Image 1: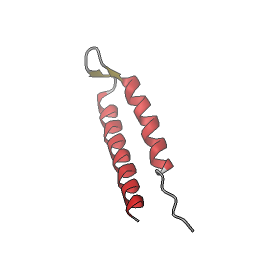
Image 2: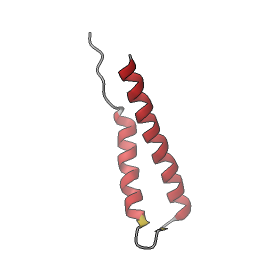
Image 3: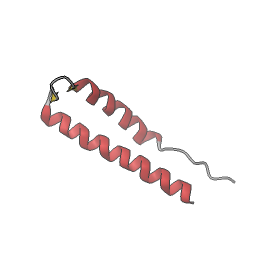
Image 4: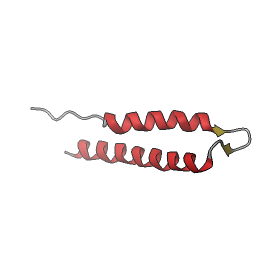
Length: 63
């Protein structure tokens, strides 16, 4: 059987929803955040989910 190569949908869904939330919370005109502590947590989780997506995708393509 052939190995299917793709992205992890769980982390992609997390990255998509948190990315949309961050986009709504960041004021690009003044470069401020609506809720700074919560938005910093969102940024950390967003970066980690993107990291896991890339890590998993590169691991699958090597095999």
